[in-house]
Amino acid sequence: MSMKTKVLAALAAAAGITGIAHAIPTADYVKAAGAGDLYETKASQLVLGSTKDAHVKMVAKMMIADHAKSTAMVKKAAMSSGLHPAPPMLEPKQKAMIAELTAAKGTDRDTAYLKQQKAVHEEALALHSGYAADGSNPALRDAAKKIAPVVQHHIAMLNGSK
Image (cartoon, rainbow, N blue to C red; front, side, top):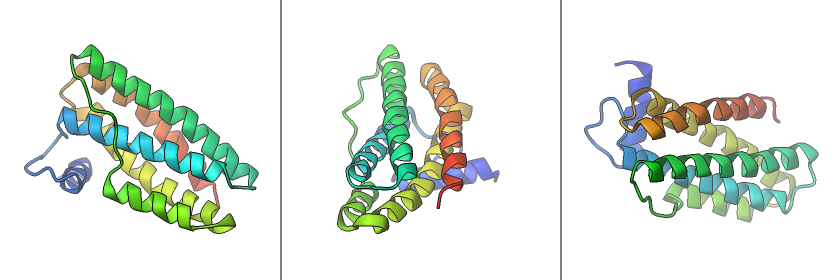
């Protein structure tokens, strides 16, 4: 089993999808992408409202802007394909991460935020890269191809963070 297949299978299992060998179903991709962007926006807004760290502020502002763009791209691609996705909702794991950030204060919140960002961006890269490679919907596959490099940029920038 290739590494990409293993990652996709792990993502599918995490989403409660069974029997997926190569590609996440389109509806699940749209749902996961929306939930990821919603988490990014909420977490970044929370941290932006409290951080004193200039780097963390820059990261949070960039995340808010870039994830708003990716949400719009996925929504537009879905709608152009005749899909009508439900508004994004946070997954339980994402709700727990927001709760962790809410409970943390000061530099502890900044540290938790950056750590969470590193983890969720690795997951997002697997999601978008996987759908870009094997997704069944051409418009969404094109959107995923455009989103994946932005996520890679975020990872590179985050790996330079504290």
